[in-house]
Length: 626
Image (cartoon, rainbow, N blue to C red; front, side, top):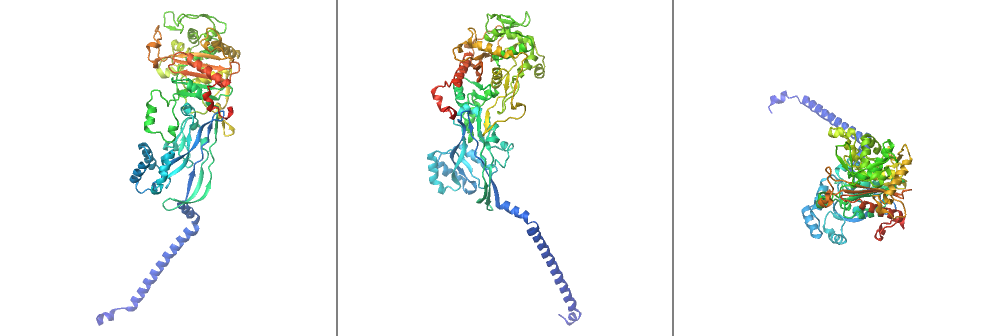
Protein backbone atom coordinates (compact mmCIF):
# COMPACT_ATOMS: atom_id res chain seq x y z
CA UNK A 1 0.00 0.00 0.00
CA UNK A 2 1.42 3.42 -0.93
CA UNK A 3 1.93 6.21 1.55
CA UNK A 4 -0.70 8.20 -0.22
CA UNK A 5 -3.37 5.42 0.32
CA UNK A 6 -2.51 5.20 4.02
CA UNK A 7 -2.85 8.99 4.26
CA UNK A 8 -6.47 8.96 2.95
CA UNK A 9 -7.77 5.73 4.78
CA UNK A 10 -9.99 6.41 7.86
CA UNK A 11 -9.47 3.55 10.30
CA UNK A 12 -11.79 5.00 12.93
CA UNK A 13 -14.69 5.15 10.53
CA UNK A 14 -14.14 1.53 9.47
CA UNK A 15 -14.07 0.46 13.12
CA UNK A 16 -17.34 2.21 13.85
CA UNK A 17 -18.92 0.58 10.79
CA UNK A 18 -17.80 -2.88 11.89
CA UNK A 19 -19.15 -2.28 15.37
CA UNK A 20 -22.52 -1.22 13.95
CA UNK A 21 -22.68 -4.33 11.81
CA UNK A 22 -21.86 -6.59 14.76
CA UNK A 23 -24.52 -4.93 16.89
CA UNK A 24 -27.12 -5.24 14.12
CA UNK A 25 -26.29 -8.90 13.63
CA UNK A 26 -26.45 -9.51 17.37
CA UNK A 27 -29.84 -7.79 17.59
CA UNK A 28 -31.12 -9.82 14.64
CA UNK A 29 -29.91 -13.06 16.28
CA UNK A 30 -31.45 -12.08 19.61
CA UNK A 31 -34.80 -11.31 17.90
CA UNK A 32 -34.73 -14.68 16.15
CA UNK A 33 -33.92 -16.44 19.42
CA UNK A 34 -36.77 -14.59 21.13
CA UNK A 35 -39.18 -15.57 18.35
CA UNK A 36 -38.00 -19.17 18.61
CA UNK A 37 -38.35 -19.16 22.38
CA UNK A 38 -41.81 -17.57 22.11
CA UNK A 39 -42.87 -20.19 19.58
CA UNK A 40 -41.41 -22.92 21.76
CA UNK A 41 -43.29 -21.54 24.76
CA UNK A 42 -46.50 -21.41 22.74
CA UNK A 43 -46.16 -24.99 21.56
CA UNK A 44 -44.87 -26.49 24.79
CA UNK A 45 -47.00 -24.58 27.29
CA UNK A 46 -50.03 -22.93 25.73
CA UNK A 47 -50.77 -25.67 23.13
CA UNK A 48 -49.50 -28.51 25.31
CA UNK A 49 -52.82 -30.38 25.54
CA UNK A 50 -53.44 -30.24 21.80
CA UNK A 51 -50.07 -31.60 20.78
CA UNK A 52 -50.00 -34.11 23.60
CA UNK A 53 -53.25 -35.54 22.18
CA UNK A 54 -51.84 -35.57 18.66
CA UNK A 55 -48.72 -37.33 19.86
CA UNK A 56 -50.85 -39.92 21.62
CA UNK A 57 -52.84 -40.41 18.44
CA UNK A 58 -49.65 -41.27 16.63
CA UNK A 59 -48.54 -43.57 19.43
CA UNK A 60 -51.87 -44.90 20.71
CA UNK A 61 -54.43 -46.61 18.48
CA UNK A 62 -58.04 -47.57 19.22
CA UNK A 63 -58.70 -51.14 18.09
CA UNK A 64 -62.23 -52.54 17.81
CA UNK A 65 -62.97 -55.88 19.44
CA UNK A 66 -66.06 -57.45 17.76
CA UNK A 67 -68.53 -59.15 20.12
CA UNK A 68 -69.74 -62.77 19.96
CA UNK A 69 -72.89 -62.91 17.86
CA UNK A 70 -76.18 -63.76 19.57
CA UNK A 71 -77.61 -67.24 19.00
CA UNK A 72 -80.93 -68.05 17.36
CA UNK A 73 -83.24 -70.62 18.98
CA UNK A 74 -86.50 -72.24 17.94
CA UNK A 75 -89.52 -72.26 20.25
CA UNK A 76 -88.22 -75.34 22.08
CA UNK A 77 -84.69 -74.08 22.71
CA UNK A 78 -83.01 -75.78 19.75
CA UNK A 79 -80.07 -73.77 18.39
CA UNK A 80 -80.69 -72.85 14.75
CA UNK A 81 -77.72 -70.49 14.36
CA UNK A 82 -74.63 -71.18 16.43
CA UNK A 83 -71.10 -69.81 16.84
CA UNK A 84 -68.49 -72.45 16.15
CA UNK A 85 -64.78 -72.14 16.97
CA UNK A 86 -62.60 -72.87 13.97
CA UNK A 87 -58.92 -72.59 13.09
CA UNK A 88 -58.06 -70.37 10.16
CA UNK A 89 -54.85 -69.78 8.28
CA UNK A 90 -54.11 -66.05 8.31
CA UNK A 91 -51.37 -63.86 6.87
CA UNK A 92 -50.07 -60.49 8.12
CA UNK A 93 -48.86 -58.78 4.91
CA UNK A 94 -46.47 -56.38 6.69
CA UNK A 95 -44.43 -59.35 7.89
CA UNK A 96 -44.10 -60.95 4.47
CA UNK A 97 -41.12 -60.00 2.33
CA UNK A 98 -41.65 -62.42 -0.57
CA UNK A 99 -45.32 -63.11 -1.42
CA UNK A 100 -44.45 -65.21 -4.46
CA UNK A 101 -42.22 -67.44 -2.41
CA UNK A 102 -44.81 -67.66 0.37
CA UNK A 103 -47.48 -68.79 -2.08
CA UNK A 104 -45.25 -71.57 -3.32
CA UNK A 105 -44.37 -72.65 0.22
CA UNK A 106 -47.99 -72.75 1.39
CA UNK A 107 -49.19 -74.54 -1.74
CA UNK A 108 -46.65 -77.28 -1.07
CA UNK A 109 -47.96 -77.75 2.48
CA UNK A 110 -51.76 -77.67 2.07
CA UNK A 111 -54.21 -77.22 -0.78
CA UNK A 112 -55.32 -73.61 -1.29
CA UNK A 113 -57.78 -73.02 -4.11
CA UNK A 114 -57.56 -70.22 -6.66
CA UNK A 115 -60.75 -68.68 -5.28
CA UNK A 116 -59.19 -68.54 -1.80
CA UNK A 117 -56.17 -66.72 -3.18
CA UNK A 118 -58.49 -64.38 -5.10
CA UNK A 119 -60.46 -63.58 -1.95
CA UNK A 120 -57.21 -62.96 -0.10
CA UNK A 121 -55.95 -60.58 -2.81
CA UNK A 122 -59.27 -58.75 -2.75
CA UNK A 123 -59.10 -58.28 1.03
CA UNK A 124 -55.48 -57.18 0.70
CA UNK A 125 -56.55 -54.28 -1.51
CA UNK A 126 -59.22 -53.11 0.93
CA UNK A 127 -58.54 -50.66 3.75
CA UNK A 128 -57.45 -52.27 7.00
CA UNK A 129 -55.43 -51.47 10.11
CA UNK A 130 -51.65 -51.98 9.78
CA UNK A 131 -50.52 -55.41 10.95
CA UNK A 132 -54.10 -56.69 10.87
CA UNK A 133 -54.10 -60.27 9.64
CA UNK A 134 -56.14 -61.44 6.65
CA UNK A 135 -57.77 -64.86 6.52
CA UNK A 136 -56.44 -66.99 3.68
CA UNK A 137 -58.08 -70.35 4.40
CA UNK A 138 -60.76 -70.96 7.00
CA UNK A 139 -61.91 -74.09 8.78
CA UNK A 140 -58.65 -75.99 8.63
CA UNK A 141 -58.92 -79.70 9.13
CA UNK A 142 -56.92 -81.32 11.92
CA UNK A 143 -54.47 -82.63 9.35
CA UNK A 144 -54.06 -79.22 7.68
CA UNK A 145 -53.62 -77.56 11.06
CA UNK A 146 -50.90 -80.03 12.01
CA UNK A 147 -49.04 -79.71 8.70
CA UNK A 148 -49.01 -75.91 8.83
CA UNK A 149 -48.02 -75.80 12.51
CA UNK A 150 -44.89 -77.83 11.84
CA UNK A 151 -43.62 -75.26 9.35
CA UNK A 152 -44.79 -72.04 10.97
CA UNK A 153 -41.28 -71.19 12.19
CA UNK A 154 -40.13 -70.60 8.60
CA UNK A 155 -43.30 -68.96 7.25
CA UNK A 156 -42.94 -65.28 8.03
CA UNK A 157 -46.28 -63.55 8.57
CA UNK A 158 -48.29 -66.79 8.65
CA UNK A 159 -50.21 -67.92 11.70
CA UNK A 160 -53.09 -70.20 12.66
CA UNK A 161 -55.77 -68.26 14.53
CA UNK A 162 -58.79 -69.52 16.48
CA UNK A 163 -61.95 -67.68 15.40
CA UNK A 164 -65.68 -67.84 16.03
CA UNK A 165 -67.74 -68.30 12.92
CA UNK A 166 -71.46 -68.69 12.26
CA UNK A 167 -72.72 -72.21 11.78
CA UNK A 168 -76.17 -73.43 10.73
CA UNK A 169 -76.52 -77.03 11.91
CA UNK A 170 -79.74 -77.86 10.04
CA UNK A 171 -78.91 -76.53 6.60
CA UNK A 172 -81.18 -75.94 3.67
CA UNK A 173 -84.60 -76.49 5.28
CA UNK A 174 -84.05 -73.37 7.42
CA UNK A 175 -82.08 -71.22 4.98
CA UNK A 176 -84.95 -68.96 3.88
CA UNK A 177 -86.38 -68.53 7.38
CA UNK A 178 -83.23 -68.00 9.45
CA UNK A 179 -81.14 -66.48 6.65
CA UNK A 180 -77.37 -66.28 6.82
CA UNK A 181 -74.41 -64.01 7.52
CA UNK A 182 -71.70 -63.20 5.02
CA UNK A 183 -68.53 -61.17 4.71
CA UNK A 184 -68.93 -57.44 5.19
CA UNK A 185 -68.78 -55.49 1.94
CA UNK A 186 -68.32 -51.79 1.24
CA UNK A 187 -72.10 -51.48 0.72
CA UNK A 188 -72.75 -53.11 4.08
CA UNK A 189 -70.51 -50.60 5.84
CA UNK A 190 -72.63 -47.73 4.51
CA UNK A 191 -75.60 -48.83 6.62
CA UNK A 192 -73.80 -49.56 9.92
CA UNK A 193 -71.45 -47.87 12.37
CA UNK A 194 -68.12 -48.37 10.62
CA UNK A 195 -66.13 -47.93 13.82
CA UNK A 196 -68.12 -50.67 15.59
CA UNK A 197 -67.71 -53.05 12.65
CA UNK A 198 -64.02 -52.28 12.07
CA UNK A 199 -62.78 -55.63 13.29
CA UNK A 200 -65.88 -57.66 12.39
CA UNK A 201 -65.81 -60.14 9.56
CA UNK A 202 -69.52 -60.94 9.13
CA UNK A 203 -72.88 -59.23 8.93
CA UNK A 204 -76.44 -60.54 8.61
CA UNK A 205 -77.54 -60.67 4.99
CA UNK A 206 -80.99 -62.27 4.80
CA UNK A 207 -83.82 -63.63 6.91
CA UNK A 208 -83.77 -63.24 10.67
CA UNK A 209 -79.99 -62.77 10.57
CA UNK A 210 -80.43 -59.67 8.43
CA UNK A 211 -83.48 -58.15 10.10
CA UNK A 212 -82.16 -58.44 13.65
CA UNK A 213 -78.54 -57.57 12.82
CA UNK A 214 -78.35 -54.83 15.45
CA UNK A 215 -79.61 -57.05 18.26
CA UNK A 216 -77.57 -60.09 17.22
CA UNK A 217 -74.36 -58.13 16.72
CA UNK A 218 -74.23 -56.63 20.19
CA UNK A 219 -71.80 -53.83 21.11
CA UNK A 220 -68.18 -53.81 20.03
CA UNK A 221 -65.41 -53.59 22.61
CA UNK A 222 -62.37 -51.33 22.30
CA UNK A 223 -58.72 -51.66 23.16
CA UNK A 224 -56.17 -48.84 23.43
CA UNK A 225 -52.87 -50.15 22.13
CA UNK A 226 -49.45 -48.58 21.77
CA UNK A 227 -47.96 -48.81 18.30
CA UNK A 228 -44.58 -48.03 16.81
CA UNK A 229 -43.88 -45.74 13.87
CA UNK A 230 -44.85 -48.51 11.41
CA UNK A 231 -48.21 -49.11 13.10
CA UNK A 232 -47.26 -52.40 14.74
CA UNK A 233 -48.92 -53.05 18.09
CA UNK A 234 -46.37 -53.01 20.90
CA UNK A 235 -48.55 -53.16 24.03
CA UNK A 236 -52.13 -52.89 25.29
CA UNK A 237 -52.88 -49.89 27.49
CA UNK A 238 -56.54 -50.50 28.39
CA UNK A 239 -59.51 -52.55 27.22
CA UNK A 240 -63.30 -52.33 27.24
CA UNK A 241 -64.84 -55.75 26.75
CA UNK A 242 -67.47 -56.22 24.04
CA UNK A 243 -71.11 -56.84 24.92
CA UNK A 244 -72.30 -60.11 23.30
CA UNK A 245 -75.25 -59.95 20.94
CA UNK A 246 -78.67 -60.80 22.31
CA UNK A 247 -80.10 -64.25 21.64
CA UNK A 248 -83.27 -64.58 19.58
CA UNK A 249 -86.04 -66.99 20.51
CA UNK A 250 -88.36 -67.66 17.59
CA UNK A 251 -91.90 -68.96 17.33
CA UNK A 252 -90.50 -71.37 14.72
CA UNK A 253 -90.80 -75.08 15.52
CA UNK A 254 -87.72 -76.84 14.14
CA UNK A 255 -89.33 -80.28 13.90
CA UNK A 256 -92.38 -78.90 12.14
CA UNK A 257 -90.16 -76.91 9.77
CA UNK A 258 -88.02 -79.90 8.79
CA UNK A 259 -91.05 -82.20 8.53
CA UNK A 260 -92.89 -79.79 6.23
CA UNK A 261 -89.79 -79.41 4.07
CA UNK A 262 -89.42 -83.17 3.73
CA UNK A 263 -93.13 -83.71 3.02
CA UNK A 264 -92.85 -81.55 -0.10
CA UNK A 265 -90.75 -84.36 -1.52
CA UNK A 266 -89.29 -83.66 -4.93
CA UNK A 267 -91.74 -80.84 -5.63
CA UNK A 268 -90.94 -77.17 -5.56
CA UNK A 269 -93.26 -75.31 -3.25
CA UNK A 270 -93.87 -73.62 0.05
CA UNK A 271 -95.47 -74.26 3.43
CA UNK A 272 -96.32 -71.58 5.98
CA UNK A 273 -97.75 -72.47 9.39
CA UNK A 274 -98.95 -69.83 11.86
CA UNK A 275 -100.22 -69.88 15.43
CA UNK A 276 -103.63 -68.13 15.19
CA UNK A 277 -103.44 -67.11 18.84
CA UNK A 278 -100.26 -65.05 18.46
CA UNK A 279 -99.46 -64.62 14.77
CA UNK A 280 -96.18 -66.42 15.42
CA UNK A 281 -94.74 -68.23 12.39
CA UNK A 282 -94.37 -71.92 13.26
CA UNK A 283 -92.91 -72.94 9.90
CA UNK A 284 -91.70 -70.97 6.91
CA UNK A 285 -90.63 -73.36 4.17
CA UNK A 286 -89.43 -72.62 0.66
CA UNK A 287 -88.25 -75.58 -1.38
CA UNK A 288 -85.71 -76.12 -2.74
CA UNK A 289 -83.41 -74.46 -0.25
CA UNK A 290 -79.64 -74.19 -0.06
CA UNK A 291 -76.85 -74.65 2.45
CA UNK A 292 -76.44 -71.26 4.19
CA UNK A 293 -73.02 -72.29 5.52
CA UNK A 294 -71.65 -71.80 2.01
CA UNK A 295 -72.13 -68.04 2.36
CA UNK A 296 -70.56 -67.58 5.78
CA UNK A 297 -66.89 -67.56 4.82
CA UNK A 298 -67.46 -66.43 1.25
CA UNK A 299 -69.08 -68.68 -1.32
CA UNK A 300 -66.97 -69.79 -4.26
CA UNK A 301 -67.76 -68.55 -7.75
CA UNK A 302 -68.52 -72.10 -8.88
CA UNK A 303 -70.95 -72.80 -6.04
CA UNK A 304 -72.71 -69.47 -6.46
CA UNK A 305 -73.04 -69.95 -10.21
CA UNK A 306 -74.57 -73.38 -9.62
CA UNK A 307 -77.20 -71.88 -7.30
CA UNK A 308 -77.91 -68.92 -9.58
CA UNK A 309 -78.25 -71.00 -12.72
CA UNK A 310 -80.42 -73.74 -11.25
CA UNK A 311 -83.86 -73.88 -12.89
CA UNK A 312 -85.37 -74.75 -9.51
CA UNK A 313 -84.36 -71.32 -8.14
CA UNK A 314 -83.11 -72.44 -4.71
CA UNK A 315 -82.16 -68.86 -3.76
CA UNK A 316 -85.71 -67.63 -4.39
CA UNK A 317 -87.80 -67.37 -1.23
CA UNK A 318 -91.13 -68.71 -2.41
CA UNK A 319 -92.81 -68.22 0.97
CA UNK A 320 -92.28 -64.45 0.90
CA UNK A 321 -91.81 -63.61 -2.77
CA UNK A 322 -93.57 -66.34 -4.71
CA UNK A 323 -96.56 -64.94 -6.58
CA UNK A 324 -99.31 -67.52 -7.09
CA UNK A 325 -102.99 -67.42 -8.00
CA UNK A 326 -104.77 -68.28 -4.74
CA UNK A 327 -107.30 -70.28 -6.76
CA UNK A 328 -110.20 -71.76 -4.80
CA UNK A 329 -108.56 -71.04 -1.44
CA UNK A 330 -109.93 -67.50 -1.93
CA UNK A 331 -113.56 -68.70 -1.99
CA UNK A 332 -114.23 -68.50 1.78
CA UNK A 333 -113.10 -64.87 1.70
CA UNK A 334 -115.14 -64.13 -1.43
CA UNK A 335 -118.21 -65.66 0.23
CA UNK A 336 -117.71 -63.50 3.32
CA UNK A 337 -117.38 -60.43 1.08
CA UNK A 338 -120.66 -61.31 -0.61
CA UNK A 339 -122.36 -61.67 2.76
CA UNK A 340 -120.83 -58.45 4.05
CA UNK A 341 -122.06 -56.32 1.16
CA UNK A 342 -125.44 -58.03 0.73
CA UNK A 343 -124.70 -59.84 -2.53
CA UNK A 344 -125.06 -63.31 -0.99
CA UNK A 345 -126.94 -65.08 1.80
CA UNK A 346 -126.74 -68.46 3.50
CA UNK A 347 -130.27 -69.41 2.46
CA UNK A 348 -130.37 -68.28 -1.16
CA UNK A 349 -130.20 -71.18 -3.63
CA UNK A 350 -128.38 -71.17 -6.94
CA UNK A 351 -128.54 -73.65 -9.80
CA UNK A 352 -124.96 -74.45 -10.70
CA UNK A 353 -124.62 -75.58 -14.29
CA UNK A 354 -121.32 -76.68 -15.70
CA UNK A 355 -120.62 -73.17 -16.93
CA UNK A 356 -121.46 -69.50 -16.36
CA UNK A 357 -122.11 -66.75 -18.92
CA UNK A 358 -122.06 -63.02 -18.31
CA UNK A 359 -124.21 -62.53 -21.39
CA UNK A 360 -126.49 -65.18 -22.96
CA UNK A 361 -124.34 -65.39 -26.07
CA UNK A 362 -121.07 -64.62 -24.37
CA UNK A 363 -118.11 -66.70 -23.31
CA UNK A 364 -118.71 -69.76 -21.17
CA UNK A 365 -116.69 -69.81 -17.96
CA UNK A 366 -116.39 -73.49 -17.11
CA UNK A 367 -116.74 -75.13 -13.73
CA UNK A 368 -114.19 -77.75 -12.74
CA UNK A 369 -117.12 -80.19 -12.74
CA UNK A 370 -118.33 -80.18 -16.34
CA UNK A 371 -121.74 -81.63 -15.50
CA UNK A 372 -122.44 -78.98 -12.87
CA UNK A 373 -123.51 -79.28 -9.23
CA UNK A 374 -127.26 -78.70 -9.45
CA UNK A 375 -129.08 -76.71 -6.79
CA UNK A 376 -126.71 -75.42 -4.11
CA UNK A 377 -126.44 -72.72 -1.49
CA UNK A 378 -123.46 -70.78 -0.18
CA UNK A 379 -122.40 -73.54 2.20
CA UNK A 380 -122.46 -76.16 -0.56
CA UNK A 381 -120.41 -73.81 -2.76
CA UNK A 382 -117.61 -74.03 -0.18
CA UNK A 383 -117.96 -77.77 0.41
CA UNK A 384 -117.93 -78.71 -3.28
CA UNK A 385 -115.85 -75.70 -4.42
CA UNK A 386 -118.40 -74.59 -7.02
CA UNK A 387 -116.73 -72.28 -9.51
CA UNK A 388 -119.91 -71.03 -11.15
CA UNK A 389 -121.28 -69.78 -7.84
CA UNK A 390 -118.27 -67.46 -7.49
CA UNK A 391 -118.39 -66.45 -11.14
CA UNK A 392 -121.86 -65.02 -10.67
CA UNK A 393 -121.12 -63.65 -7.19
CA UNK A 394 -118.00 -61.74 -8.25
CA UNK A 395 -119.78 -60.42 -11.34
CA UNK A 396 -122.56 -59.04 -9.14
CA UNK A 397 -120.14 -57.47 -6.68
CA UNK A 398 -117.62 -55.96 -9.07
CA UNK A 399 -113.99 -55.41 -8.22
CA UNK A 400 -114.32 -52.51 -5.75
CA UNK A 401 -116.10 -54.41 -2.93
CA UNK A 402 -113.81 -57.39 -3.57
CA UNK A 403 -110.70 -55.23 -3.33
CA UNK A 404 -111.88 -53.39 -0.22
CA UNK A 405 -112.83 -56.56 1.63
CA UNK A 406 -109.79 -58.69 0.76
CA UNK A 407 -107.40 -55.88 1.68
CA UNK A 408 -108.63 -56.22 5.27
CA UNK A 409 -107.04 -59.68 5.30
CA UNK A 410 -103.63 -58.41 4.17
CA UNK A 411 -103.88 -59.20 0.47
CA UNK A 412 -102.09 -56.76 -1.81
CA UNK A 413 -99.70 -55.37 0.81
CA UNK A 414 -96.71 -56.24 2.94
CA UNK A 415 -97.62 -57.12 6.52
CA UNK A 416 -94.57 -58.96 7.85
CA UNK A 417 -93.10 -57.55 11.03
CA UNK A 418 -89.58 -58.95 11.10
CA UNK A 419 -88.56 -60.31 7.73
CA UNK A 420 -87.39 -58.24 4.78
CA UNK A 421 -87.91 -58.74 1.09
CA UNK A 422 -91.51 -59.96 1.02
CA UNK A 423 -93.65 -59.20 -2.01
CA UNK A 424 -96.95 -57.34 -1.75
CA UNK A 425 -98.54 -59.61 -4.34
CA UNK A 426 -101.31 -58.07 -6.41
CA UNK A 427 -104.86 -57.26 -5.37
CA UNK A 428 -106.22 -55.65 -8.54
CA UNK A 429 -108.55 -52.67 -8.72
CA UNK A 430 -110.08 -50.32 -11.29
CA UNK A 431 -107.34 -47.79 -10.67
CA UNK A 432 -104.59 -50.38 -10.97
CA UNK A 433 -105.78 -51.64 -14.36
CA UNK A 434 -106.20 -48.15 -15.76
CA UNK A 435 -102.65 -47.26 -14.67
CA UNK A 436 -101.15 -50.55 -15.84
CA UNK A 437 -102.99 -51.29 -19.08
CA UNK A 438 -104.81 -48.04 -19.89
CA UNK A 439 -108.04 -50.04 -19.97
CA UNK A 440 -111.20 -50.12 -17.85
CA UNK A 441 -112.12 -53.03 -15.61
CA UNK A 442 -114.34 -55.55 -17.39
CA UNK A 443 -116.90 -57.94 -15.86
CA UNK A 444 -114.81 -60.85 -17.15
CA UNK A 445 -111.91 -59.62 -15.02
CA UNK A 446 -114.10 -59.83 -11.91
CA UNK A 447 -115.26 -63.34 -12.89
CA UNK A 448 -111.66 -64.58 -12.97
CA UNK A 449 -110.75 -62.90 -9.69
CA UNK A 450 -113.81 -64.57 -8.12
CA UNK A 451 -112.06 -67.95 -8.22
CA UNK A 452 -108.60 -66.61 -7.39
CA UNK A 453 -107.34 -66.46 -10.95
CA UNK A 454 -106.85 -63.69 -13.48
CA UNK A 455 -104.90 -60.68 -12.29
CA UNK A 456 -104.86 -61.63 -8.62
CA UNK A 457 -101.56 -62.85 -7.19
CA UNK A 458 -100.76 -63.65 -3.57
CA UNK A 459 -97.76 -64.94 -1.65
CA UNK A 460 -97.89 -68.02 0.59
CA UNK A 461 -97.34 -65.76 3.59
CA UNK A 462 -100.32 -63.57 2.68
CA UNK A 463 -102.65 -66.54 2.19
CA UNK A 464 -101.40 -68.15 5.41
CA UNK A 465 -101.93 -64.99 7.50
CA UNK A 466 -105.41 -64.49 5.99
CA UNK A 467 -106.23 -68.12 6.87
CA UNK A 468 -105.01 -67.52 10.40
CA UNK A 469 -107.38 -64.53 10.67
CA UNK A 470 -110.24 -66.73 9.51
CA UNK A 471 -109.27 -69.39 12.05
CA UNK A 472 -109.31 -66.85 14.90
CA UNK A 473 -112.71 -65.52 13.76
CA UNK A 474 -111.48 -62.15 12.63
CA UNK A 475 -108.44 -61.40 14.78
CA UNK A 476 -105.73 -60.45 12.34
CA UNK A 477 -102.15 -60.72 13.59
CA UNK A 478 -99.25 -59.41 11.58
CA UNK A 479 -97.03 -62.47 11.12
CA UNK A 480 -93.86 -62.42 13.18
CA UNK A 481 -90.84 -64.68 13.66
CA UNK A 482 -89.33 -63.46 16.94
CA UNK A 483 -90.98 -64.25 20.26
CA UNK A 484 -88.25 -62.97 22.58
CA UNK A 485 -85.08 -60.93 22.20
CA UNK A 486 -82.87 -61.94 25.05
CA UNK A 487 -85.20 -62.15 28.05
CA UNK A 488 -87.60 -59.52 26.72
CA UNK A 489 -90.68 -60.00 24.57
CA UNK A 490 -90.17 -58.78 21.01
CA UNK A 491 -91.72 -55.34 20.53
CA UNK A 492 -92.84 -53.82 17.25
CA UNK A 493 -93.49 -50.16 16.62
CA UNK A 494 -96.27 -48.39 14.77
CA UNK A 495 -99.50 -49.76 13.33
CA UNK A 496 -97.93 -53.15 12.74
CA UNK A 497 -97.09 -53.60 16.40
CA UNK A 498 -100.11 -55.65 17.40
CA UNK A 499 -103.27 -57.01 15.87
CA UNK A 500 -106.64 -55.73 14.77
CA UNK A 501 -110.09 -57.23 14.61
CA UNK A 502 -111.91 -57.64 11.32
CA UNK A 503 -115.46 -56.76 12.28
CA UNK A 504 -118.30 -58.12 10.14
CA UNK A 505 -121.82 -56.76 10.08
CA UNK A 506 -122.91 -60.20 11.23
CA UNK A 507 -120.21 -61.67 13.46
CA UNK A 508 -121.98 -65.01 13.31
CA UNK A 509 -120.72 -65.41 9.75
CA UNK A 510 -117.29 -66.35 11.10
CA UNK A 511 -118.59 -69.47 12.78
CA UNK A 512 -120.85 -70.42 9.89
CA UNK A 513 -117.92 -70.15 7.48
CA UNK A 514 -115.72 -72.28 9.73
CA UNK A 515 -118.48 -74.92 9.84
CA UNK A 516 -118.69 -74.88 6.04
CA UNK A 517 -114.91 -75.41 5.86
CA UNK A 518 -115.22 -78.30 8.35
CA UNK A 519 -117.67 -79.94 5.99
CA UNK A 520 -115.09 -79.69 3.19
CA UNK A 521 -113.51 -82.59 5.10
CA UNK A 522 -116.51 -84.32 6.72
CA UNK A 523 -119.08 -84.15 3.89
CA UNK A 524 -119.28 -87.04 1.43
CA UNK A 525 -118.86 -84.55 -1.46
CA UNK A 526 -116.28 -82.39 0.25
CA UNK A 527 -113.19 -81.71 -1.87
CA UNK A 528 -110.92 -82.72 1.05
CA UNK A 529 -112.95 -85.66 2.36
CA UNK A 530 -109.81 -87.80 2.21
CA UNK A 531 -108.79 -86.13 5.51
CA UNK A 532 -111.64 -87.73 7.43
CA UNK A 533 -110.89 -89.93 10.43
CA UNK A 534 -109.03 -87.60 12.78
CA UNK A 535 -109.94 -87.29 16.46
CA UNK A 536 -110.02 -83.52 16.05
CA UNK A 537 -111.91 -81.33 13.57
CA UNK A 538 -110.10 -79.83 10.60
CA UNK A 539 -111.43 -76.83 8.68
CA UNK A 540 -109.96 -76.47 5.22
CA UNK A 541 -110.27 -75.48 1.60
CA UNK A 542 -108.59 -76.95 -1.46
CA UNK A 543 -107.40 -75.06 -4.51
CA UNK A 544 -106.03 -75.73 -7.98
CA UNK A 545 -104.18 -72.83 -9.57
CA UNK A 546 -103.87 -72.66 -13.33
CA UNK A 547 -100.40 -72.03 -14.68
CA UNK A 548 -101.70 -71.02 -18.12
CA UNK A 549 -105.07 -69.94 -19.49
CA UNK A 550 -107.37 -72.39 -21.25
CA UNK A 551 -109.34 -71.40 -24.30
CA UNK A 552 -113.12 -71.54 -24.15
CA UNK A 553 -114.27 -75.19 -24.01
CA UNK A 554 -110.64 -76.37 -23.98
CA UNK A 555 -110.08 -79.26 -21.57
CA UNK A 556 -107.10 -79.58 -19.25
CA UNK A 557 -105.18 -82.82 -19.91
CA UNK A 558 -102.14 -83.14 -17.65
CA UNK A 559 -100.83 -86.20 -19.49
CA UNK A 560 -100.31 -84.15 -22.65
CA UNK A 561 -98.57 -81.27 -20.90
CA UNK A 562 -95.03 -80.69 -19.78
CA UNK A 563 -94.83 -80.94 -15.98
CA UNK A 564 -93.97 -77.26 -15.62
CA UNK A 565 -97.42 -76.47 -17.07
CA UNK A 566 -99.31 -78.64 -14.60
CA UNK A 567 -101.65 -76.85 -12.21
CA UNK A 568 -100.42 -75.76 -8.81
CA UNK A 569 -101.98 -77.65 -5.89
CA UNK A 570 -103.00 -75.59 -2.84
CA UNK A 571 -104.63 -76.10 0.54
CA UNK A 572 -105.52 -73.89 3.49
CA UNK A 573 -106.62 -75.31 6.82
CA UNK A 574 -106.56 -75.02 10.59
CA UNK A 575 -107.07 -77.31 13.55
CA UNK A 576 -108.76 -77.95 15.88
CA UNK A 577 -111.56 -76.09 14.11
CA UNK A 578 -113.29 -74.92 17.31
CA UNK A 579 -110.17 -73.51 18.99
CA UNK A 580 -107.35 -73.51 16.41
CA UNK A 581 -103.75 -73.95 17.53
CA UNK A 582 -102.23 -74.03 14.06
CA UNK A 583 -103.18 -72.81 10.60
CA UNK A 584 -101.40 -73.97 7.44
CA UNK A 585 -101.05 -72.95 3.82
CA UNK A 586 -99.28 -75.39 1.50
CA UNK A 587 -98.59 -75.26 -2.22
CA UNK A 588 -97.03 -77.85 -4.50
CA UNK A 589 -95.83 -76.12 -7.66
CA UNK A 590 -97.16 -78.04 -10.66
CA UNK A 591 -98.48 -80.60 -8.19
CA UNK A 592 -101.78 -81.12 -10.03
CA UNK A 593 -104.02 -82.67 -7.41
CA UNK A 594 -104.87 -80.71 -4.26
CA UNK A 595 -104.73 -83.99 -2.33
CA UNK A 596 -100.96 -83.53 -1.95
CA UNK A 597 -101.04 -80.31 0.10
CA UNK A 598 -104.14 -81.55 1.97
CA UNK A 599 -102.34 -84.73 3.05
CA UNK A 600 -99.27 -82.70 4.00
CA UNK A 601 -101.37 -80.36 6.15
CA UNK A 602 -103.05 -83.25 7.98
CA UNK A 603 -99.64 -84.74 8.83
CA UNK A 604 -98.50 -81.37 10.14
CA UNK A 605 -101.63 -81.08 12.29
CA UNK A 606 -101.03 -84.56 13.73
CA UNK A 607 -97.39 -83.74 14.38
CA UNK A 608 -97.88 -80.34 15.98
CA UNK A 609 -100.97 -81.17 18.05
CA UNK A 610 -100.08 -84.70 19.13
CA UNK A 611 -96.35 -85.08 18.49
CA UNK A 612 -96.86 -87.66 15.74
CA UNK A 613 -93.50 -87.22 14.08
CA UNK A 614 -91.53 -90.07 12.55
CA UNK A 615 -88.88 -91.27 15.04
CA UNK A 616 -85.96 -89.89 13.06
CA UNK A 617 -87.06 -86.32 13.85
CA UNK A 618 -86.28 -86.73 17.54
CA UNK A 619 -82.93 -84.96 17.10
CA UNK A 620 -84.92 -81.75 16.56
CA UNK A 621 -86.88 -81.93 19.80
CA UNK A 622 -84.97 -79.24 21.65
CA UNK A 623 -84.99 -78.57 25.38
CA UNK A 624 -88.70 -77.84 25.49
CA UNK A 625 -89.61 -81.42 24.51
CA UNK A 626 -87.24 -83.32 26.79
